[in-house]
Length: 207
Ligand code: VGL
Ligand code: ZN
Image (cartoon, rainbow, N blue to C red; front, side, top):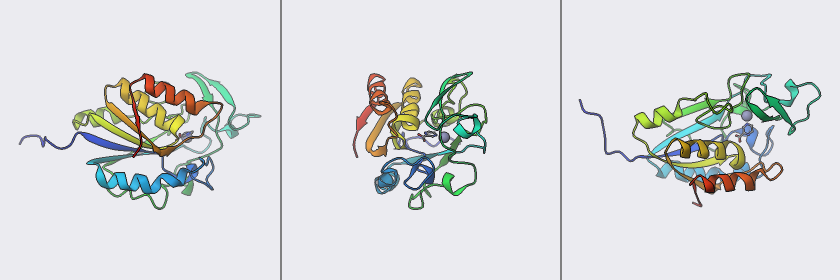
């Protein structure tokens, strides 16, 4: 049997459209829920769809509550470098970790979970925050001859940007649709992320 080829080589990567990143959630991103209709339209129109899901054990090392005296949104030093400390969010199996109720995710071919190792956070869909440990997504896409990625989701300046930068480094053609993303924007992190993505050759477009 021959491999099925000639299928479209583009995948939509929907990053972390989860309750905790939407208004009312534990790490709410302003307007996070506003992107859902746009994302649903893209899910209907692109040939392949992959979702990511932030998926932390309780007591995760990225939670401020795991570091005595630390405030959410402060920075700490981890063996792998600087790490922002977050409110507890996207704990495995909780409602906060579930996808937004209106997200039409049934066409997704893969859900990749990240941040499940206690000792290391993972913003990127491709590598954990040590920038070394792979999630397996790069190999999965390569094996399927997918070479072009369209990225949307939450948050622009963390998980979307880290994913886009890693994807570009791995040789994928990457487009981020900025109107289908929303940012946390901590201390200028959005402008810095946009600059880095531009410099890495990521196309920043709108739907
Ligand atoms: C994210 C902070 C912590 C994100 C995940 O999805 O951008 N940000 N965990
Ligand atoms: Zn997280």
